[in-house]
Length: 295
Image (spheres, rainbow, N blue to C red):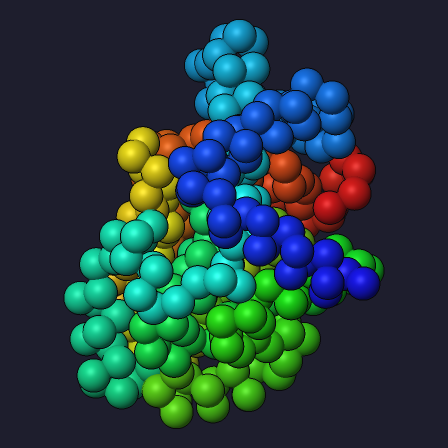
């Protein structure tokens, strides 16, 4: 039943002009902003910590624009099953230079991203254009998880669970694949301590560890929605040069470089960042989790 509903919804949305679909998405996001309080307080706390200079009114405006942005992103996510390599040209401007170079070298690469813009569009774009991308994901549960799984797999993309062993992930990299990692959420006690948006933060160490262990490049990628309704997908290499000789310090330093790259783009497009997670739930003093509600 869920699969049929998805097919019907995708069919309807793909027969509407995309500008209309984006307008529907903005309206949907605005309605959710007005009527639903779920995680709104979490987002406000995050914005206060990340941008303490903003007034209450400015925070509200930014939060409303964030809801509207993700309403549009949701519409494009639902339309992913109808994507093809040809139709990508109508919505995505993609600078392939760095990923093309990594593919031609056959060395593999870590694709590091965050919950910014339309991160869900990165994998199908790379897959449809023939790049060997294998993202690491946290499996979603319930009927919603089934819908997400169906959409993600609709373009032939291959995903692996975050519970997959590090040995398997290392093997995939050594075979020349791109390993996709979202590296911006709180990593609890297993993370590495860095500064992100002015806050001491526990963040995943995976991107740095895999790059150091294998010597493959880290490519930070963002899929940003532009004012003309098109996405701009760019990848920027994260330098692996001049890292400390101590391994733990090298991992921390490289993770900080990744977070600095993400922070720069978040500050340019704050309305396109997912502020609804507990971004700083781990207390740095004792490495314990703060009780601020669900993840």
